[in-house]
Length: 211
Image 1 (cartoon, rainbow, N blue to C red):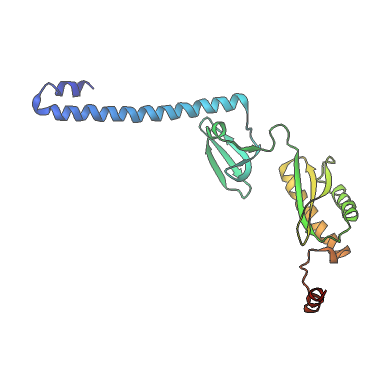
Image 2: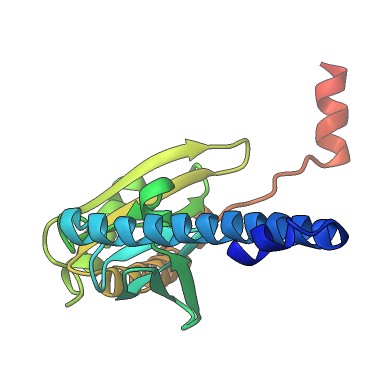
């Protein structure tokens, strides 16, 4: 600022001096804001290091993307997306915004498989088949295995299978295995119990209208 102050003494360069002072003020504001953001990010990094809301290989959902924490620095976090893309997120995101951490306290993961079946499906028989499928899989951690009817529509019932595994990767593979084998079981044993679109024949409609 000393050069600008000296120039202010001379009338002919007063305007130039004023411009220099004004420019210096703007630059100072910009530098101050940048420094404030940098300090905030560093403080967020220190806070995460102390509280550990995320750790390396934690399974998270960030910005609707599912993946693993691959790298944590003082200024950013790298999330490895399931399709091998990398999502680079500012470190303060994990302090200021909500996100899901599926492995915060434990790596154990619950997986759900949903399929739609006809109302005529024998639920108890399907439940027994699911238990056999899950029990035979080396991916199952032998903790959770359940079958429930969670929803109904005018055409079908929604059957949900809930299973557990020791990691998110194993839970994904177990879900795929259960889904494939359950569909194959129903196709083979109860093909008529797959979802149907029921339509009335003209004769049936005429008969009801006559009544």
